[in-house]
Length: 370
Image 1 (tube, one colour):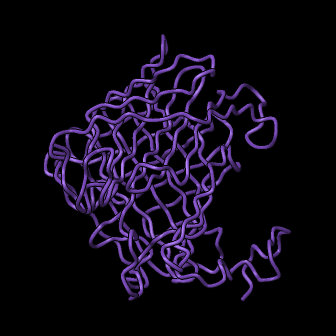
Image 2 (cartoon, rainbow, N blue to C red):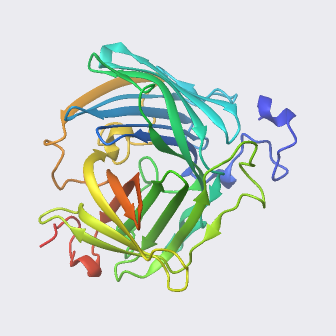
């Protein structure tokens, strides 16, 4: 089946672009953004699942101790450049440089008219590929980019003007295969339910750091990325061989877990010996966002799930209500103050830990730290 984008010379195989991932049901293509200061946070996720026939999106804000969300889900458009569903729109104004996010959901207490501009070049993380038994469970590429936001949003009737403050954030574009939607019935596969993931993009005034790691139950990494990204100057490229990115192989993490939870009380990124840089980046969590707010592990609004031609809904909860160990609240991002030598910055520390993880003493699906 042809779609309008087939008119562009971007084909990777002999198939039309509508036919993705050799029919794998977990093929996806997603936009993900966040924005934050030290007292509020917002995120938007918009995903297309071509072999499930679904497009969905979520927008969520944490402000004044409340996390408020709107969700939308429906039939995937034939024109894949129509990146909107219900009240949520993502626009590519200039690829890898300028995006817009529009949300119009007053019945759920949320409106937004936001523009982000690149602070760094787009960085291709290490490819995430892993089998579960004989099945390919992960095979994804992620491009991560630090950004700055302007515009306006409102949550629960309270207006938040971004004009008078610096609002950092991250743009995350990923695509490929990863577990989404309702999994087909299959025999249990040893280790398939274990997952340890940290993702930490950090914004400083003059430079940015980025760290990502997947580990198995023993704490052995199976995918990892560590890099220093220069802040863009006028006319600097946002992609290509001259992006100025410096790899930092060997960077590692030290997480101190909050008692009874799978949430960091504090954390340190330890830079590799011989890097010539300050060796430790201290991360101080300020507050948390639960990723269910944009659909991750949500019991009702899980990604890639067919619901109807168009369905829109919303929810809100105090952040205190969400500070519990449940499958839908264990996946979180914390806004963190980052101290790196004489630099002070702001970023996030995303954490997703399911199943056993020996370095933290976790032995069950969701037991908390002792």
